Length: 199
Image (cartoon, rainbow, N blue to C red):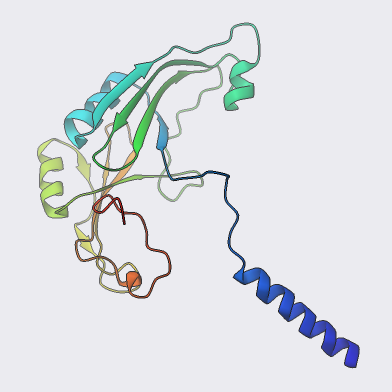
């Protein structure tokens, strides 16, 4: 019995201290640099991000391919015969960058994911006024969803959100929280926000 109690105390001490330990990190990791998105039509994508969303084009480069070897597979995990026809980088306000890819590949699939699909994703843009964003997007012919939706309960209370879609189906979001969110009161870690990038 004495041994069982000592083992339990040891286990509680070990697992308790493990929970308190700080998380590991990639050496020198400073933050999110960009999100890469493969698009069906580069001209359409650049036009959408620059002339509708309001990002600025920074650079374009490419193509990249390897006709004889496995460089593309080894570097990017794609079919060895995949070709990146073009890469364009855009900068969006005081947030991180978006990298647009135009690929062709023998095994390429067109599976635009829903937000509920594994591997699905969306890109969110902080705006000052979600209702104004919705009116603007709809005037530009952009498909929007239900909203603006104010979040009134839970840790995200203070947000207002609106989902919308790029012409090729990419999911996007407009979000605003001018007075912050409920979780921030007493939070040890506060989320980075483009409305106050140095915070």
